[in-house]
Image 1 (tube, rainbow, N blue to C red):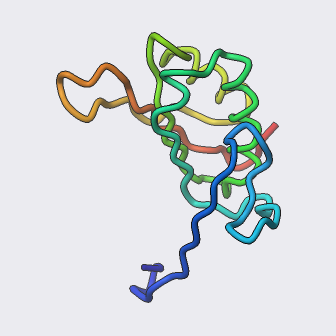
Image 2 (cartoon, helix red, strand yellow):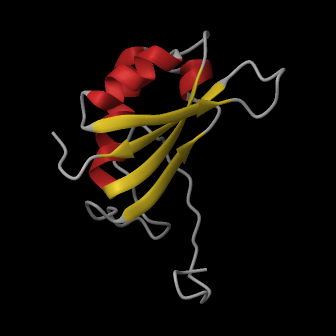
Length: 118
């Protein structure tokens, strides 16, 4: 629902998160067009810091100023401190870190894009 409680159109597509983000029809997502970007199960398990930096650049490109990024982090991929540092270098600030439950091995890092990005 949008801010007025009206249904919004949603589409799904499959692509690598290390490529330029695209719509379900294949068009490039416009800069500053997303309120929220979520990555779960990739960064904390599989991405080294270089891959995470590639993702961060694209996440920041598509986020609106003040938009939120939810990025997983973990010991087998990019850890929480590294995620925070990488996204901070692209103009994001850490809001919070949380786990889904006490036994979750991965952390979800919540970051906010600043008013301006680098």
